[in-house]
Structures are given as C-alpha cells and as structure tokens.
Length: 467
Image (cartoon, rainbow, N blue to C red; front, side, top):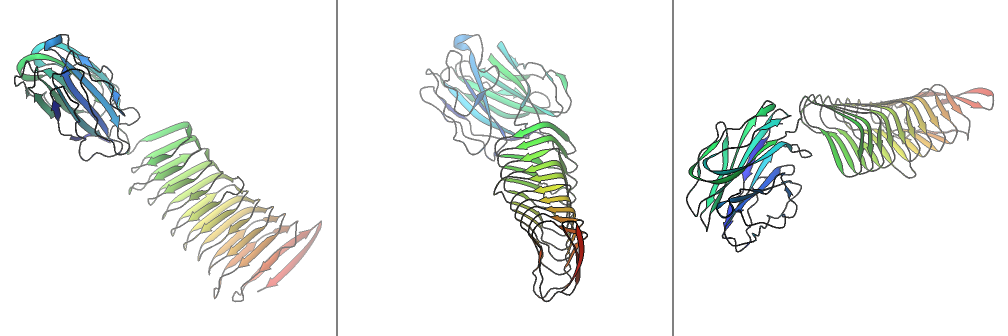
C-alpha cells in the first residue's frame, strides 16, 4: 500500500506568553501517522511532552547560535480513536509556531525505516541529512525549522527537486521563526541524499530527514510462527492473492480472523489455532479459502461461510463446560470439511441453505449435541461416535445425513421433524449401540425405509423400520 499525504492542520502561532493549540488535520482515520511539529527560539523549551505523543529520535533539534538560533520539536502518534488537539506551552516569552501533518499507509507497528537529524549554521540554503533505507516504496519527509532573524520574511522559495511542499509558514513575533515540510515517494531502497531547499534570506536552521515505512497488502505473504493474541485483535487478508500463514495461532481474547476485501482468492492458513474465547473465523468474499490445522475451540465460537468458500479444519476440537459452538454454512454452494472433529459440550453443526455441504470425518460427540439439516443439504460423518445424549435431526425435504459408521455409548434420538416434508434421509451403516436402547421418532408425512443394525453384548440382530 502506497504511503499518501492526508492533510496538514491549520498552523497556530503565538508570542510565547501563552500556550497554543495546533488544529488536528481534517479527514484523518485510525491507523494514520500524525506528526506534531513545533519551532521556538533556541533558548526556549516546551515541556512536558504532549499527552499521547512520542518524540522522534533527535527531538528537540537545536541550532548552536543561542539567541539567534532555533529549536525544532517533532512528535508523532498513530491515530487510534478521536483525540484532543495538543496544547503547547513555551518556557519563555518569544515566539512559537506549530502544525500537525498526517500520512496514511504507514506501518503502524514500525512507522520509520530510518530518521536523521542535521544541525547547521547560518545559510539561505537548507540542507538535509542523507539516509540509507532498508525498505522499498518509502516516503521521504523533510522537516526544517528556521530562525527568522528578528521578523524578516524568510520563506522557502525553492522546494527540493521532486518534492511536494506541505507546510511553509513563518511568524515575525519577537525573534521570529518558521516551519517547512515537504515529502517525496521513493521506490528504491539504499543510500539516499535529499536535495536542498532555498530560502529568501540567510538564517540559522535545523532539519530532519524521515523515511516512512509502508504497509504491504496485495500479493504479499505473511508467515507467523507462534502467533499469540491476548487482547481484541483483527488478523485480516485485505487484498486479492494475499496469503496469511500462522503457525501456531493462539487466541485468548476477542478476535476476528477475516478475509474482508471484495477481492476473491485470499487465503488464510493457521496450523495449529487455539481459540479460547469469543472468536469469529470468517471468509467474506467468493472463492476465499481458510485452512486451519489443529483447530481447538474452548469458548463460544462461530465459523460462518460465504458463497463458494471452502473451509478445511483438521483436526477440530471443542472443549470447555457449557461452551456453545455453532459451525454454520450460511450460503449456497459452501463447503465445510472437518477431519476429525471432537465436540465435548453443547454444540450445533448446521447447514442453513440449500446445496451447502458439511463433511466431518471422525466426529466424536461427548455432550448434548444437535446435527440439524436444511433442504438439499448433505452431511457426511465418518465415523460418528456418541458418548452422551444426542439428537440427530433432519429438518427439511431432500436433506441427507450419512453416518458411516455410527457408534453410540449413550442415548440417541434420531428425529425427522419437518411437517409436510418428504425425502429427508438418514443413513447409518453400520449402527452400533452399546448403551441405552436407541429411540427413533419420525414424522407421519415421511415415506422411507431405514435399516439399523443393533449390537447388544456379542449378539447381532437386524431390525427394519417402516415409516
């Protein structure tokens, strides 16, 4: 993602006897990098650091000319929610000028590829320190603070070649001072010497060279080995052909793992993933894939599915007393594959739309569990093991349930409950009961045959039920 300039807030200045409040830039959003830049006379200071802001390395940058010199502050923050415009109070009466400048597309966790400060004497030529960048597609931001030599107008007349000027402001109060900001998109990495700027008059100045590091989205691969989340977190594939590999992935807070772009062909791979609280694993675009090996769910969890999206979970384990897990296919032609899946508490495995498939190999149910089915939806479980009270239900016409084999160590209720519905099929081959006698309930409107092979002790008996 390219780094872009968002806006500069209105410049604020004063005579140094009172605090000033430079305005926030317009149009900023969460994730934007915002600079707070202030220039004062060299012997004056601004304390304390404004709340919520961090000093750039080298701040403040002070010229050595004392009374006729300049002092330049650069602070920054990554926007995360609305914030109050900062208040800046100089330590002495002279002058102060300040402005906020915002950029978008900067890596929020590591925004600066490299920074460098330069301190200079008196000149009309404003030079900036060279840097060596490690990243490609950086944006070079040049910031200068200038002494205005007792009120003279000392604006930048020649902007560095290739750069776009964002701020060029002066204040003539008392000794006077000014701020200059310009930026340039640099594609390559390596050693770089910025061009100079020219001012109308010769005066003292100090400067920063700042290389911003970009975020990378489309066609990029991310590999996380031992990725642990302990708070509210979003792990997102945002563009077409973007891959995410997380191995292993542990979640202990509210988390959303999503492919949330309108662009298809985004993949997420987690091996293994452990989810221990409210979690949503979502593929929101067509033809998006999520592969989760060693998926463990220990809290309330949803795994929804979009059209023509595939989900593969191998294996899938649910534990925790009282936890409720909904594994849901919500759109036509969506597939869910779980191999194996273990459910040890109240669980619902549901396909709600026609032509949605659920394939669960090695399904083990150790608590109260429901397996309902929608019209024209198929469910395949091979094998299916029950050790507690379980209801297996076909809810609509033309719905199929296949269990091969089904082994029960507890009470099993097999129900087709749809009214005025036909062609709902339940197939068990073979069906073994080692606990309480299995009860079978059917709707009077159904017309089908079901074969159940029952085993008690070491004897075999075949029973046929006509419904």
